[in-house]
Length: 341
Ligand SMILES: [Zn+2]
Image (cartoon, rainbow, N blue to C red; front, side):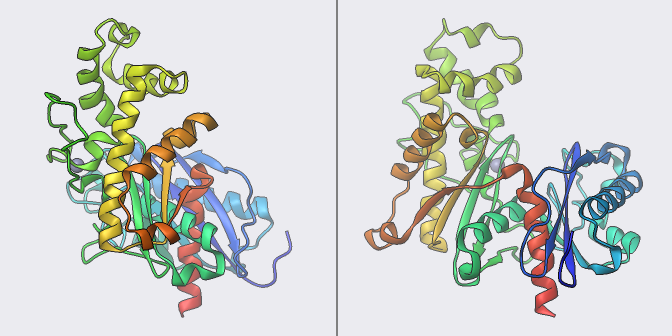
């Protein structure tokens, strides 16, 4: 492929797969599809770094870009990690191998490839991509929040086009922000517990883990004859709730109303903290059937308490191309670094 001059690359590292992209100096992506390969993170850092190097070589080959045209690389991984890309010393779900504890992932990839590497966690990278995709050239003057409902609740906060990372890199951990439970829970419904140790934070409700540990066990006491009461493990049953919701099942809809309210309350906190221009929602729940997605988005919007002036300008959007958003956001961060020099 022809490009005028130089490019940057984005590498998205996940629990199972890597995905790679290339972005040219004008901000055009040269890859339109997922370019996945095994991430091999369970085998430890040395193996995983080689897997990323292969993924990088593969995307260059596919786009016909020579290595000397690449000015910088963006890397994104699941957290928790510092702003500089050092994996938490306590390890994490995705980085269980002992070699990952306190590992300087960004520095190691930079040394291996001999190119400047810019780090973001995966939620922040996806948030950066959603922001740029919506605002284009106006991105540096806009703010947004992205909430991505998956196994946990991830995402990020952008202000004036920049990811808010905080002093230690833990800003934008939206899942562990406490939200008001009054009016969200049913009378007698237990306070939902999160794996982080908190009760009543956003992730304890708005995540697959929240369905499995908190919402489904409660709602099955209200619907004891529901088919999901007889479904294998709690984890399997939790994954099936969405398909029931898409079919209009009353118990599943009750669960998703609670999730939508949780996200709306989180967005209300954002409205009072950074007052963003856009509120993005991502994850399985909005990758669902269109009618269900619209229903869910409308519930989130009506649960977000905005002042009239805010409501006049606020945009509610879906995170686009969620499967590619990490690699693309990582590449955007690399491009910004090159432009800032
Ligand atoms: Zn939490």
